[in-house]
Image 1 (cartoon, rainbow, N blue to C red):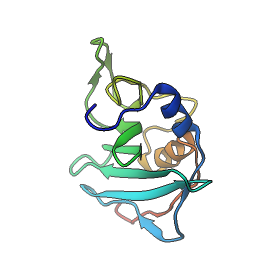
Image 2 (image 1 turned 120 degrees about the vertical axis):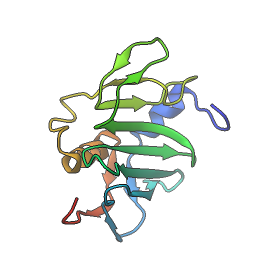
Image 3 (image 1 turned 180 degrees about the horizontal axis):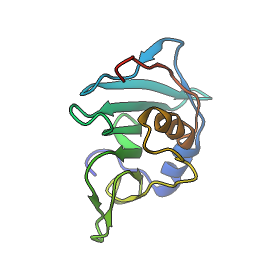
Image 4 (image 1 turned 90 degrees about the vertical axis):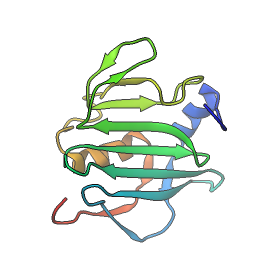
Length: 149
């Protein structure tokens, strides 16, 4: 990984750390083909994070939700409605799938979406809120869903 790499202990601590929205602004859930990046902060305000929400341009049920730390380190990424993923050991993981930071590999490994944490993976809107919980975003951004979303 060019630039910043974390130990697994650091990454796990950042993933588990409660994260809060930085302000009370309403964030529009992106239209098809759109993307939004939302800054987040730790409770003690010592760590900054980003939540990225990306939607497919043609396939409305395709997209990516991810949290980043230190500007560029992807901690957790959920890909849905897209293609399969091939892990470094050549195991193929179908969509939807979850990437969780792994020391030495960054976000290169994926695993099947944990059904207990994401009970309705067919609904991108509900899956967003499940993802926020999974990433311990305890005071999430105030998302507004557009009528076409």
